[in-house]
Amino acid sequence: MTRIPFAVACCCCVLAWPLSGSAEDGPRATAEIKGCTDAAIAGTATLHERVSAEGIKEVTVKMQVKGLKDGKHAVHIHEVGKCEPCGDAGGHHDPGPSGQSRPDTASDTVPATDINHPFHMGDLINLDVKNGIGKLEHTTNRVTLSPGRLSIFDGDGSAIIVHAQADTYCDEESDLKKGCAGGAREACGVLRPAGKP
Image (cartoon, rainbow, N blue to C red; front, side, top):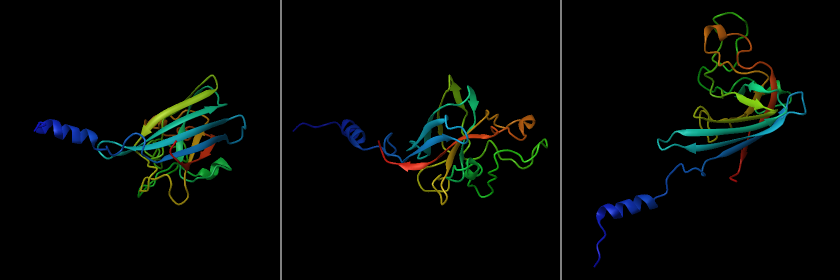
């Protein structure tokens, strides 16, 4: 009778065991991006949740938008799944027990006392636009697509907003002023659950 060493047998069992959180098993979402007032602005956003080896839910956001002016544009997940008009998307997604969803301060008082930016759960990095095409790829563990306290699919859904200017992240006292989170809303897309490709 041929004997297989114990270490080899254990290794084979481990390799055959399916890993949780594989690259393809998590929930997905999409948004069709449209200009708030400019019909020439259009694009898509895709979100894909995966679970890390430590059990942390991570969402990769990919966007491509055309028709924006070259430069950096702030991008945030907003707290309501409405885009018509873009103001109906509400503030930044921030479901915490004392969340302050206002994207920037209501006044130019420095230092601001009524701001939680850039610490909202829906705060993302800037979209970089070159030759009229904006691209973004970013992974965050601040939101989830699956059920839970950080889910963007709560009772009123969520939308993704592209702003007219860059987000300065408002992390310096001199930055804590109106407009530091990107200013006017330039494009919006309602986030919707999507099936696996």
